[in-house]
Image 1 (spheres, rainbow, N blue to C red):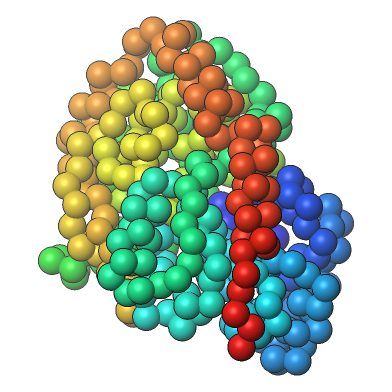
Image 2: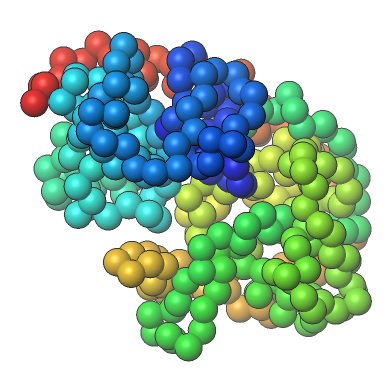
Length: 346
């Protein structure tokens, strides 16, 4: 259950459908937009009634979703029918007050940061779900490796830009999750740094001459053909797929020195302090505040450096820790354990 259109979240859902034994996929959206997929797809552009949710769940052992359930009736219906509920949580959109959390059987956490937070919640709020941490995989076979030798050009992947947040101590200043505003300021401070930015002209209307703006390609593997080091100055991430994809392509990573971004074995980190940020009406999260001058200094420190060994290490890291070839069996094992665990049917 989850989207098939868009950036990070949709990519996670498509990978799940391709690499796990999924019988059917419930997708929010216009049925006229449906496309071929690895399993049966059902596109729905409205909420499901309880009886419709039960009909869709009939015959299933598990319902699995990423971040939050797109169809609110499916989770309580699954609990009532004895169908196990597995969530792959993106921590920033979770609140202990969310009604559906109590119906989850397994939190399949994609980062150590998320697993630590939910372990605390389990003890504090008496949730009964099991918690497993499996570093989330990407399809490394789709991403062509190219050894980088010298850092001459940095690459930044904007995607959708992520949610917009407001600093609680500075409500006049808002930022997008991916940190494009900070990168723009750093590029102005370091005009000798060459940078490719994949973003729409709407998201990035003005940049200094040392920045090459490119439209995002349809195929995400094409993001990493050019350039040498990927810089992602994220204020926060649920997972951060570009932080893994770039390394699979042999492009070392520079990212924020805050979890979970710094879990991804970056070549370099950007100093940051953590402050409270509001990203929704009822969501306040810790986010990284970055000084553009410090980001510029980090970019200068890697510009012109030999990175041959770092390029190889980046590819090996993702193959060892974040490939579906390695993690598929572990994820499948966690699903089988959830199925084997007795569950109370309401």
